[in-house]
Image (cartoon, rainbow, N blue to C red; front, side):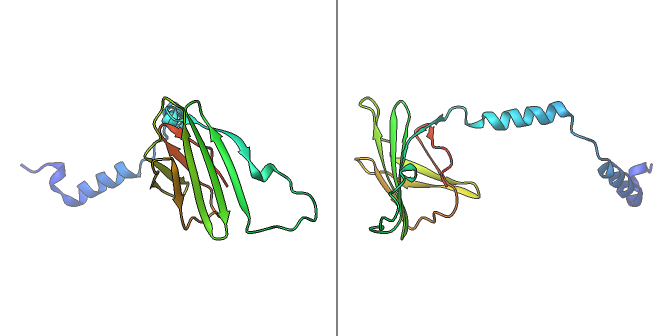
Length: 152
């Protein structure tokens, strides 16, 4: 006994009509999706910038004594991140300093907006280095439930 779905042409037409229908996503679903995306990092404590050498204004007409360099310090209640950005050659060097009751994390994750994060080992005293490290794109660091703001 043939059915409507026995005819391949009729089946393809019905499927085409079903796929051609465009239904708008309800606004409540869109809002819920955005809210979930916003809260995806709620467990990460945002570290506060405590020092940025770019804010130090050198006196006018002072000759530079080497390649450009930038130092940054970020703090949370349990961890301090001290970063040195060197622009010639491009490199990122840093040290993690933990409070007395917290262990130094074994690694940091370097995140870029346009790439997957890369994991960098941290030594026993908290030092880490990434070379070469192109400083022409924003990045941030994530470790032990802490994340820095985007750095550019």
